[in-house]
Image 1 (spheres, rainbow, N blue to C red):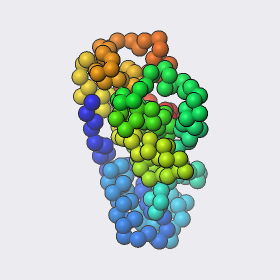
Image 2: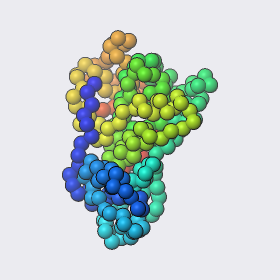
Image 3: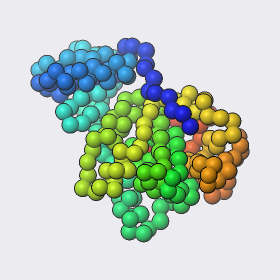
Image 4: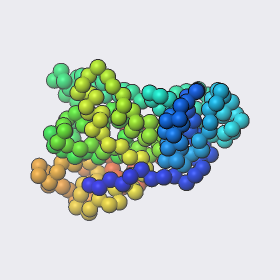
Length: 240
């Protein structure tokens, strides 16, 4: 399954701006400007300004800001609520798996080493990480996030966040993330490929179902479809 690169949004977006931490160096500014270009959002110089001042004076229509710090990305809103990447429930669920406890998603999808997984509602990537751990280095896990700025924060966090568990770190690095609508990403999928299942084994291990076949009883609880009618609206929470 081919994956498209992250699309560039029309510039500028009025609901989002990108800035840096206080007293940034040149590489940090360049990195922030790169994210601004990718997201189609204006880049605002931080200088000595607090975020409330930037929201009020420089970006009165913005609802969110992406703050590029030296060690992480922080998504914040006007009220000061913040989101930065953390493996979330993947930390606990992976521990349960390693202790031999069953996981509902892994069991329902019937995942095995070497499988290919498409997570069409990535969210915080907790389930994608579990899938990456299960399918191993010979498998692949792709995640799609419909909210661009959330997709960027999660994508960069998966690359850089390090925990005290080597298996978790390795699984996070194997999740490939793109942002966009599932209908666009899935458009190149051949007609014979399965698009309704949370995971699709390669043809070596299981014959793929027709594109419009309904999920089997065993996969119904984990189905995440590509068709646009099941697309998560931008800004809503879901997945991982």
